[in-house]
Image (cartoon, rainbow, N blue to C red; front, side, top):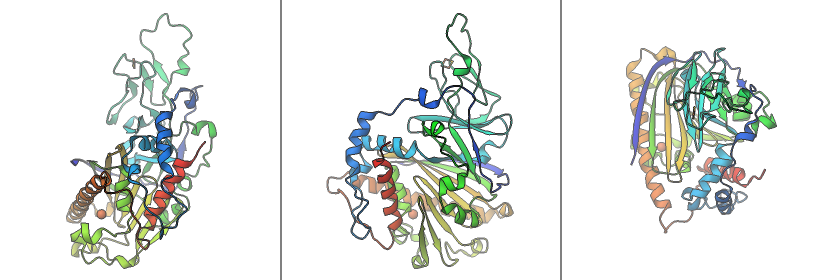
Length: 415
Ligand code: FES
Ligand SMILES: [Fe+2]
């Protein structure tokens, strides 16, 4: 069952300069690792037994795909959350969502609840969205605030995370207000994207080199930047879907090199798939057309440019059409359920080209509906006793194979 939610904005991205920014919160004496719980280790070790059922050393021509348990087992998802999603940089939102001091938005990834805001100095901040008193969530949704006041007993925190007021604590002993600020999360931006690093050990390791583009995208940062992916765009709207499939099913579908297009997306019949080629980087794969012919439609063609489809491990996809961009973020909600957040933005020069925008938005929405239907069908098949694992079409599914190898590498990694 698919649930669709559409949110409309009509705002313009700030000019996104190529400089990337990273924000560290060192306002309290606490180290995040000292207050953060370690994940459920029994469940994780159970999931770990499944990791080596896929062998990344076998080349794509001979390899079998990961076993269906990777897509259905709850313990395996626990392991993924711990080692894939709670390590490394993850896209959380857009700078457009928090343009001014006090703007904030909240989110959840696995069991991590977070709030991202812009403080009084205009700096990006991110925290665990959990009150230090008795753990209530602090903020909900998005909006603008001068401080975060807990809805439960009124403890109040500044936009920089400091505990400003602890209500009715007269008589408390051994309580240091400086030790009860919100627990910080590493936050950074690259172009229009806001990134979080949820690794509880990140602060203690201090292993950022300050260049977020390279840290996040590796050597693909240059090509994505050269194609304008981090440029100034007008933000149009967001669609959100809840889909009954494992998060990797949705990623796999994006990573088959257009294999499914003639069968799933009949409206794209005639697309010359032979003209597309993959460039595979460390954690990014980019599919580009050699010719300017994607989704050729009379009134949209003049405004498009070379399309580019980028997958950024583990869960972020960019459909870049030169004059407009659709990004897709896939978040696991359970072994058989994920949330898909699809954002649309356009070149500011197109603000009066309403017909073009509407056609692009509608056409893209139809494609996503078709992808969702097939992904839910795949999930049902993965749960059938008739299926254990499949094979790759080597000429077109190389990026998918790399994705599975990267998941394996993360999961097999022991600290
Ligand atoms: S839980 Fe936040 S003030 Fe009590
Ligand atoms: Fe598709």
